[in-house]
Amino acid sequence: MLPGMIRLMTHGSPEALRSLASQHLPPDIAEKWLDLLRPSVRLSASADSDNVVGHLGGQPHLPTGMDWPVWEGHGPLSFIASIDCAALPARTLDIDLPETGRLLFFYFDGQLDDGDALVLAEDRDSWAGARVLHVPMDEDVRDRETPGELKPYPVVPLAARVALTAAEPWHPRLREAFAPSAPLGQRYDHPVCTQEFLDALWAFDDAVGHQIGGHAHSVQNPVEIEIAEAVLEGEVPWDDPRLSEEVGDWVLLAQFDSEDAADMMWGDCGALYWLIRPQDLAELRFDRAMFTWQCS
Image (cartoon, helix red, strand yellow):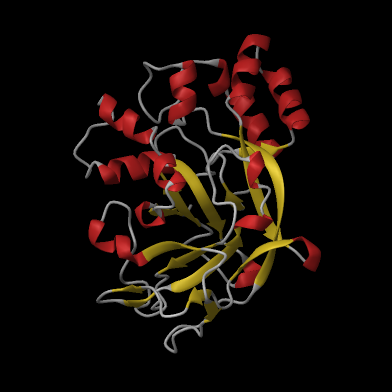
C-alpha cells in the first residue's frame, strides 16, 4: 500500500452521496466531486431466483469444442463467475458491455501447486493464468465438468443493483480533476484529502464487494496504476506523464471479492480485478483484458 493511503472507496445512492459531500466539502468542490462518481452494478448473493444475473462458482457453460482454459505448464484455471449480460441493468453503466451473452471469469487460484505460481500483472509470463471469455447468446454451449484435479467452488447465485461509486481521492482521475500537479497516487493538500472527509467516506461504506463497471474498490493502491505499470513493463517512473496517460486508458470490467458462501478467499481477504480498454470492450476483445489481485 502506498505511503499515507488507507483502503477506501464507497458506493451508494445519489442522495446519500450528495448528502455526504455537502456535509464535508465546500459547495463548488462537492459538485465537482459528485460529477466524478461513476455508476456500477453491485452483485451480491441472492436467494431470490427471479433476480439472478449470474453466479459465483459451479460449472461454466462453454461453447461446444472449446477447451477448458489452461495456463500452459501449470494447469487448468478455476472457474470463478458467470455473468448474464442480458440480465444486467447495463444501460445504466458508462462502459459498453455486450447486451447479450455471458461473461465467464477464470483464474489460476493455486489449488494445483499450493499457491506457488502467482498470477501477477507485472509478470507477463503469468498473464495466461487469468481469463475472461464472452460466450455469445446463440453459441452452442454445454455444461462443462471441472477438470478432475480441481475442486469447483460452490454455486452462489448473484443479484444485481445499481449503485454510484466514488474513487479514492488519490485515484488518478480525481487527482487530475483536483490537483494535476500532485504526485501520482499520493494524498495532496485539498479538501477531498482531509482526514474528516476520508473518515466520512470510510464510515459510509468500506466493503469491496462484487461489481461490474464503475470505479474499482482497490484494496491497496489504485488497480489502474498497477495495470498501467505492467503494460509499460515497469520502465516508466511515476512522475512520467506517459504513466498517467496509460492509467486513463483502463476501466474496471469486473471485481470479485472474497466470498464465504462460495469458499473463495483471495490471499488475506483480497479481491480479483479485471480491467479493459474501452475500445477493446466495444470490439469484444476480452482477450486483451488485464488482471490483477490485491489483498490487505
